[in-house]
Length: 231
Image (cartoon, rainbow, N blue to C red):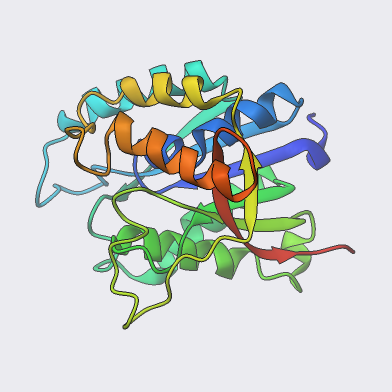
């Protein structure tokens, strides 16, 4: 049995969110001895998907496995919530899936998407995580910190005048791991965009350099600490 106090669970709505949001931090935490579990939560689903065939996930999941290997992820987990459809299925189903996962891993730190990301899957996963991890519940007492990560191509696309904007209050120096993050992202050939768009190696590095400048280092990842529980 792993030491619970050294467990981290990263909830990624889609394959590549984990690398975009916190690839450097994952590599750093693994180097520090933490067990880091990455759960990619959406896929084809149990029924016929309205947009994509079952085969379309084979490629991106293969890419996710290669990225996870580069980041030295302890365990990569796939779930089958229907991608791009989480606003159509009952919220209790998503909540139940996330709760089961949290109970299975029992993480000390829980990393989730930003609630106000443009993609509704991100919103649904963030909501479900917060429901499962309510700090007064006996079933979530092992969680010490809940943290939202920043996802290029989603986090900053909602209009700030109609929703909350991402204002990070936690920064992690990933100067020694930015190359690993970029190498992991290179594996997502099906997801990468051209250099002038957000989901590109150039933009990922540019954001890391900007976040690094906030704390006086070469490269960093930024987060929003949602809750810390010292029991």
